[in-house]
Length: 305
Image 1 (cartoon, rainbow, N blue to C red):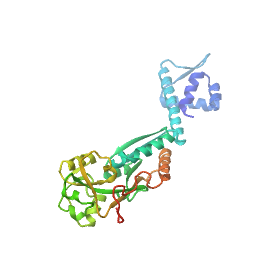
Image 2: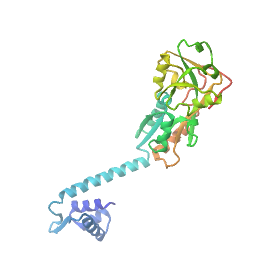
Image 3: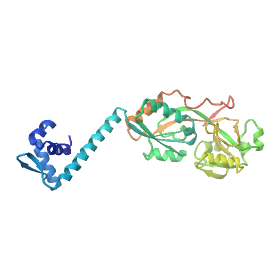
């Protein structure tokens, strides 16, 4: 019980013994609370009269403010109770662009149907930005590749394949699949992460230093530049399946795949809503979010990254 509730109850019933009874306090405890509050405030609030404990002139605004404080305290208590019982909650999710367009909305929709009181804030960014935000506490969980977060807890959800994207009519479009050696001399348009993650590992594994002409932080802008002939790029198949651009998409002979899923920080204790969301993700069958690998192409040799 807060001191504000004690003072406000005395204001309303105008009697210390009655207030003590309502609050299940002793009269001395109520009197002591009043004296301490007046001392801390530096102002006397009450005077005794035939009608009981009355507010002194000019203190009515203090009583009105106490009423607001008590209402807010009650609201905070209700919010906390809702969080503890998962009636309400707030989850800050980060995701790479390809996941945000495809299976993440379905996952959020199903979860929200079960827990309609939980709200989400969605941030779309590259690997570096998402990793920085999860480590600084700005996000609660992030949907990324496992390779990008080796130091964070991770729940795998499926695999995706990295594809070569060419302008329509490019000579390599005649091939069913391409070798890294085929694109050694091409001009590249890459994400703002550059060669920091899976794309960089592909080139490093073949000792190739790509000629990066442009770096963008938006995948559809990258595709538009490829469409207009600025160069070639490497993007996930998940993003390309419904991309509205006139480009040519080809797999690599090695079929470079990556594992996608959700990561979170193990430095803090997740709130109940976040724990429930992670439990829900954990219960999903692997591959439920992402369509099976090679829905476009088939191969018996895949290289995971």
